[in-house]
Image (cartoon, rainbow, N blue to C red; front, top):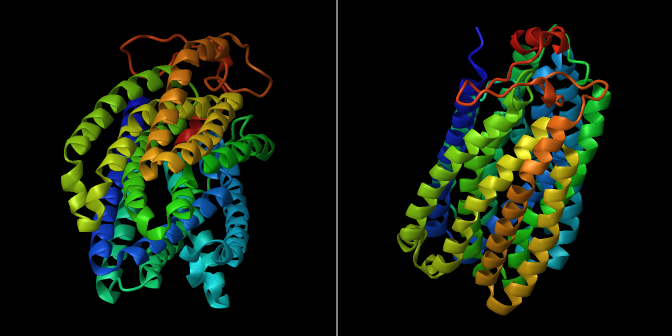
Length: 457
């Protein structure tokens, strides 16, 4: 018997958030140990290398994770083919991007001088492909409503990473970087076997709008979104390294990683919102409002504690990081408006409102680099932190102001050919306040076999 969708929303969201929280705690301990066993310049170079690997991997993923969470819940027997082709295409693209970056980066910045040898170029390229699959498999597990397995996988990754650092020491950039990639590779092999042998095969009939052609069209829009997202988010730490150098940029990089870890908690609930909102008969608008209220309360409490204890928290990383309290506080305020942005975009993905998704990320892609460069030259890393916070607040305000109008437009639009009940045709639903987060669909508009597709496993 399948649990109620509202319970699945919070159960899976909590599992993904716990995974992110545990990863953040273990990751903070990892970097604290690295900061105490490795000189500051090597830590800065390692964080730059990890940030580059993550940025290239995110480009190579083409936002497939978001597309998979939107489509797999109703894809039926198409889901095996969709995941297999997604894995192959994204891994190949990631390897090519990694090789290209490794050939060019040492000529641009001394922070990547370890990539000068042919062997390191090959290893770095392969590591980008491994990291791509490592990230994507979490989305696949979540889309199959197996989110509680994600924390198990990520705890294994972080503990193994910690043990490798303790075993081999943190004296070089190569050791720090290798301790990220080896456990990720082990996790990819294990989870891939589980997915393709046990979880993905099914005989369930797919929904009419969940075939490969519709998936390709949606992915094209997500790929455009990804380009904007990478410019506006993932390239910020690299921009700081280029502006001030690895040593001066290390405090910013560590503060940025802590901020991103907090936002990962929100992304966990956002991913669950996409999966449950994409199910037939789900009222994603009501889900969104309830989840946003609870998320803002939780994130606000965490931010308040972090703001008060900023100097003490930074002292964990060593004496060289205590002067980063100002930029740390600025970056830690960002998750509050980011909660509005992330959950708003997740709702749009469940509804497949691609114009809104692209518009939000295009705004961030334009505003963040311009403001970061301008304020960064005037105030250094503090200016970059202020620019990031200001852009998040502007975009969140814009989303709130346009939210009601956009939802009215979606509810008023008649279903298009191929749209499934509960997915786009919101006029066939009646929202009942304070009831379970499930809409009541008219029986004559139900999609045949949709329930079988959800519960086949």
